[in-house]
Length: 134
Image (cartoon, rainbow, N blue to C red; front, top):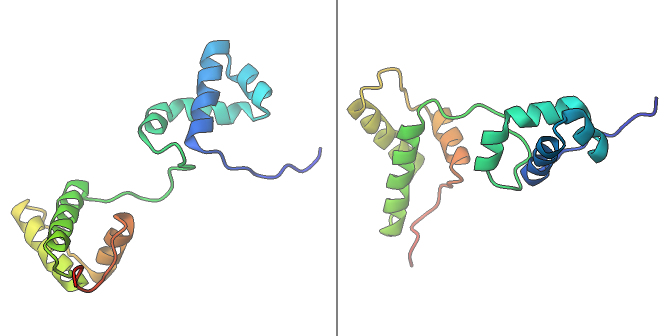
């Protein structure tokens, strides 16, 4: 059997494969028509809700999500508000504000460590920078 190169597929392709499988009423027929394994189509059909809700260019759902997503969303809004007012926001300020918000939400196990802060900023596409106005 010849070696096959692993390929990655974006969400738009996966949705097309799902629709084809639904239309043909068979995962196997859809997979054969697209040159895929049937198991891939089965897996994508299970992920249909996620695939419809994400960007069409997304390829996978890897990595852990945030442990406290509502806290992080509120904190991101605060950071963006500070930047809109022309203030630079340091990681120390982010950590202090996060601890304050966590205490207000009665989240006792939140520590707000430096590594959490850097992961939070990476998840939310934030960067440390100086004042945003001149």
